[in-house]
Image (cartoon, rainbow, N blue to C red; front, side, top):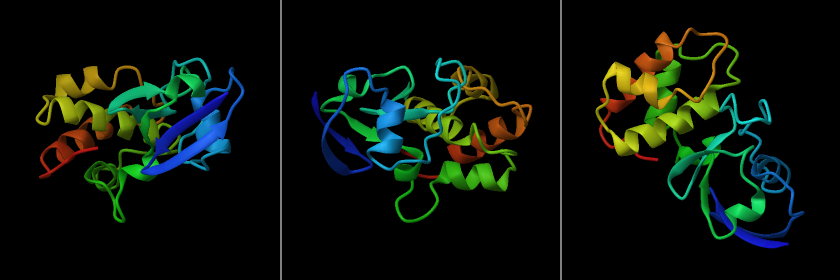
Length: 155
């Protein structure tokens, strides 16, 4: 099937198999390898991207379902320099192995778009569908709250 998507501001016109998952399309055809393949069951959230401004787990979306969509990956979140969320994750030591980091940051970007000044509880609720096995979440929550304090945090 033929699809057209905008990924990180670049238009792609491709033929895809109807069963191809968006995460595989992003990595293999669009070259966006910053989006990891995690569990392939939508449990971990590592593959979270923004599709038309909303966070989605790209392992639970078919590439054909993204036809006509605007997709932002972790690689497209920054515009030549670190996005405030990326900077805050670095400064607050909100990553260890880093596997969950792209999904956490993308879910946080969606959260902050809807709620630019969340409480700690709202951050925890907003990241509920993303799993981390290393950090215990405290530094991640602190990083999101720090980024929320930055002027102009948008996805």
